[in-house]
Image 1 (cartoon, rainbow, N blue to C red):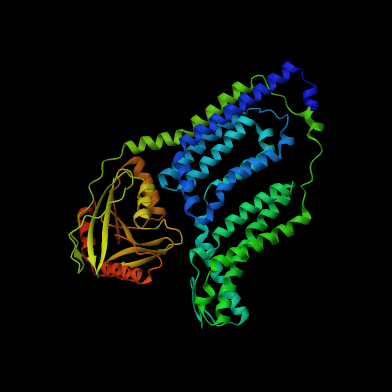
Image 2 (cartoon, rainbow, N blue to C red):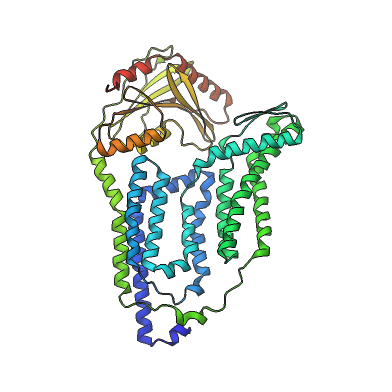
Length: 515
């Protein structure tokens, strides 16, 4: 029996335990409510965990958090929730931040805000002292958010520069143009898969876990986490440099690139082992003296705590619902969009006598499709018209879906054809091949930050123009291992784009400028 238990009479002890479990029950009910409110964010995160190798480790986050909490059970013994209703007010600005992220169409922003709202729930219901005791495991929940893809271009540029300087240091002749590195033995491209994002995210997750288990000092934890972020970036540069140098030694770029992803994981495992060895001399994982020693100083459960916990949890949930409720109200103001555009194309490609499959489109959109046979391949032109108040999120999601941009390791590059700038996506694992563009208010639009902000604003105040999405792709993609068929489909798609003059005029007639 602990010191705290010895100081309490049995009825008082039972009352304290009962009140504690009531407070925890309120916390659990509020968590379930937030999962219901933010189910779209949760479903999107799980979909990324499944489809992307950079985030497969996210399935381990919840079990790790459960273990970390269990590992701290002695430190938590006797700590009763002390609800702090004032912290519930933090949920309101978070809810408004979620609304901004939702209108701008940034799913990662919505997920980060939802996770921060969950942290506010823990802080408000448990109270600052109890929350501080479990802040490490609870903050580890942020690794459930598949965040960091925006770092890929910067990581690619860093890796390319690292390889270039390394080759210069080794005296290997080279020419670097952006992400393309040429040596006498062949050409290497620093693709997205070679950027090292998956290594960086996995290393950061490992570094935080290791720091929580091995260290107690916040400074040592921060230092090890920083090392866990810096070392994988440099290690990935060394890996890429090694592959290019090996190509120089072997006399063949193709031979050096064989199974380079597999070799990368082996190299990364060695880096993690090195981090473990480097971190062990500074370990602080010795158990603290028994938690009974300071149990008497721990706050007892206030008799009003269960009721305050229920009210606090309910207040956090209600305030976090403000943003989703406003987004739903704005969506109800949308006007029904026009039907998909039927093109009367004047291409050397021949219109096919078939009805292509029209996949499900974004909310409030009506898709249309037409098939054309070009160079012996069946191509499908799909169009989707979005309403004038449609926010950018569904538009860009549908573009990624029809344009094969959601496929991992896809290579996307612009292609100028017929006065239009298409985004051509080519991927092999899984296979991907499509060209897409967006048209609004009489001209082509690029889906950058300006497009997102304009669509977000018009989704709230109105006055926007309908947006037309056009995507061209083979009706059935060739298998990744059928290189000849893939080359034929790519050539047919390029032929269609470069010889077809009718798409721009059809778009200008169907969605003219309002000026």
